[in-house]
Amino acid sequence: MMKIMLSITLAIFLSSTIMTVCYLISKKSKKSREKLSPFECGFDPKSSARTSFSIQFFLIAVLFLIFDIEIVILIPTIMTLNKNEPMNYSMTMTIFMLTLILGLIYEWKNNMLEWAK
Image (cartoon, rainbow, N blue to C red; front, side, top):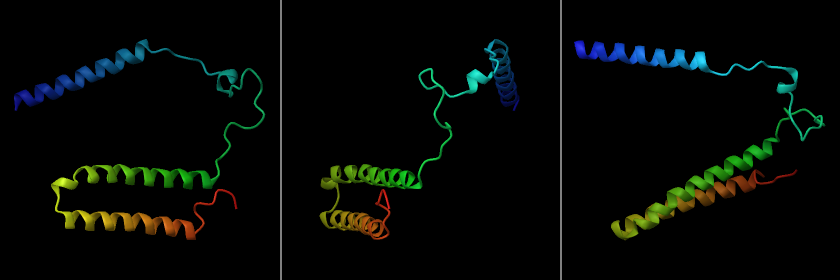
């Protein structure tokens, strides 16, 4: 029990010491209007730097990530073909590919793949 208490005390002391030293030697910067303004090649910006993106961009990005992850799942299953039963493997791959195709058809029918409307 004493070793645990000593370890906890040492960990707290060491982490607080490191945080204090980092705070003392850290570079303090003064925020000014020039430093907070967006920089565009030395010119004043033409529009606000905080413009929002179109929701279509995010939908396409999410769809790309979903299909990318599905490909990452698909590649190792191909490599384990010789270790599985052929019937079990073909059923698993059929269900997986059917799910992908049905998802793509659903997205296509709901115009989720259209960039401009």
